[in-house]
Length: 310
Image (cartoon, rainbow, N blue to C red; front, top):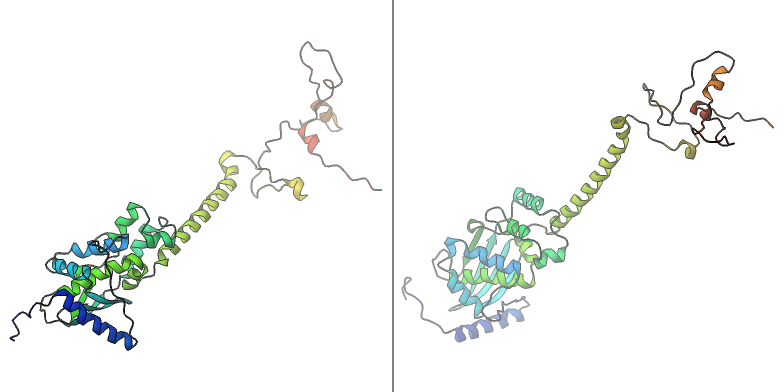
């Protein structure tokens, strides 16, 4: 048969029989095998699986081969699919069992840091992240073309052992759809493909919350210490509780807010104290013992008592 001639069509049932015998042989040799099993016609149902498939279908470079790939993955032709760190290995049943290898470029560090900054504080837990249960704003960041987490067409390199010379053969397309189906049950594999750690998103969220709390506490303390300067008063530092008299600020002598009267300047000999004492009596009221009691100046009140020696 010439190289340009198509191989004769082999029914799906016959291909599956041949592939099943090959898979049994691999298992006897101890090689792990994980086939892709699709229930119904829906390939992916979770956020990560759907987003992966939608990303594939958004690139025109893949459009001509993706329909055949969907058919192959639905009828169980992906007999084995292994996802590693930036790599995908698959065995796809065709006229024979073909080997497919896919390499996914790692996500660049600046791009990953930008995603973390935009999503920080918006993802509550690892379970929420893996289940795709977050706000629409976070979803838009993750699936955004060129700046999100999903690879572009030029970040995906692949090869297949089949003789098809097309840029993307149906076996590669079936493998890529198989990745979407696998992410339904193991979404953490997506981050391994992109060579990033999903915990970075949660660490950034916790760090941001801690820094915000620390910043709020700092602002509160600054406001308290600046209160005296703003309002021109001295704050009570509770000297009685500490047992030490309050010390005025260096270079400044503020008038105490409790000082309601000054000792008037007078003659020596204590006359000023008598002048400072006065009687407060309501107009027209009869004198009483309380009303006749003189009000002492605050200067007198503040005078410390001398301890008497025993």
